[in-house]
Length: 389
Ligand code: FAD
Ligand code: DHB
Image 1 (cartoon, rainbow, N blue to C red):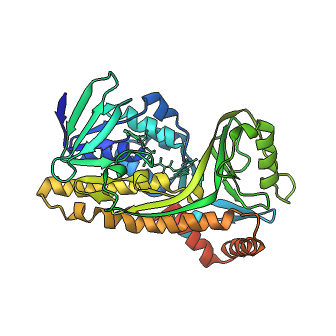
Image 2: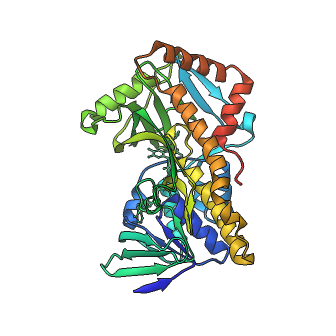
Image 3: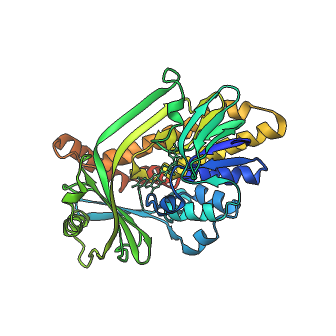
């Protein structure tokens, strides 16, 4: 079977789904192809911190009604080190708030509001003729081979997708840094033990206390990249969280409860440039990965597709391809700012265990950002996110 569309979107994560809605709002046709089933993508637990710009964009598209009802708005975060908590007043310093709302809730809202073509459980996706007549071949959920001819392909298929691999290797520059740690994440049926997020540096390693609702917490522990989840029974997870989040002020305790989900995620910094080749445009995790410490990956994916949708909109309205030609350069400016911030937060908060020099540098930096208004303001403006392009 052969069909045609203006923009073929590979991947129904935040990048692909937000792009689809942006294009529809501008009267541009698109088809979204997703390898996983609907129930899988709607249950995939990942990010939870949305920048103001991300919320504004979803609101402007009419996609944020449930978000505004259910979200938690935060105006600060805590940095905990040497068993003392120090608040960074984000809104006071940087003028913007952050929103806590699960990525999978965003995905559910975007799918529910989408009336256009979105094909789940597709397989054998491959891309061809990227220079002039881009084509996507795939097998649909009922096993029928399909060919989708497009003007443009948006590769929104995450780090392990097929889009980036369709670009000849000698065209792409890869910038990469691996870290000697991973995050063990849990979602627990337990009320948050703090009103705001706590980023904790301890001699035992980093821990993060986050949340999803007044009854559900989301927490992370720094572990080894090859950590085996089987070695982490519930009691060990709670004991380690208690030890790392421990603070000297009396009266604080960590509420626990049944663990609903757990996983280990590797940490890496990764950027390819350019983010485009012929008529293929990469967006989100397909083009770049940040370590999660800055809470930026989802927000960066949304910023990319905003740039792409604006460029496609001018292209279809006037034939002007200047925005498309500049896509990669425009996105990479933000990508590298976010890469730096995420690397910096990661370096400051994750002890490596074997180097006393590194440890003293981390503690000095933590004392500095929590005592200098200038340094705290720099952290705050990066954390809340710069305005979207
Ligand atoms: P993805 O969400 O990976 O979506 C890609 C989609 O493409 C997937 O649905 C995938 O199934 C599909 N796909 C793959 N291959 C194919 C194929 N061949 N054909 C068709 N479809 C395909 N970011 C934040 O901003 N804030 C946070 O607080 C935060 N916390 C995080 C915590 C954890 C534990 C993790 C793992 C990530 C976190 N992130 C965070 C990062 C964020 O989740 C990602 O950056 C975000 O999911 C990127 O969106 P995307 O749409 O680019 O990619
Ligand atoms: C969450 C994830 C992050 O990566 C982060 O930096 C803060 C919060 C979360 O899942 O809630």
